[in-house]
Image (cartoon, rainbow, N blue to C red):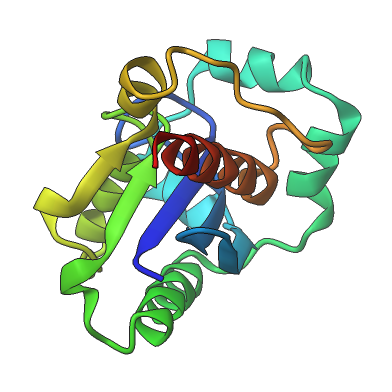
Length: 176
């Protein structure tokens, strides 16, 4: 599988936001291997990654289930979490990431934040800049703004990534 949907839960909408969790799933005509990890925020705060009051208040208004997904899963030290994510990608692509297409929900959100995080910690971004895909554009121009069917656990990074990947699968298959 060469498509990877990435979803982040963050404490800001800035590209240098504190990242709470990373969810990702490979997909083509069906969902493939997935990844979920909560990141320890202490290092991110120490290294001046941002928290926005409006985003923090927004999180307070989310479901208990969404908040628990972040609080109940033990956070992993930042660099270890990024290495685990890189390894997940490399293992699933048999180390050839040249054909990997990464998707995020917005042209300047998930992928931009992940790239910023990798660069801040001098780590290689495991995809080519020209292989970034935007779900919002796909939604408008391919799926005619049809709503994404959300399963339980909305605002859990993995659940959201899976729902978004299923959306692309559905509307890609309908076009064929």
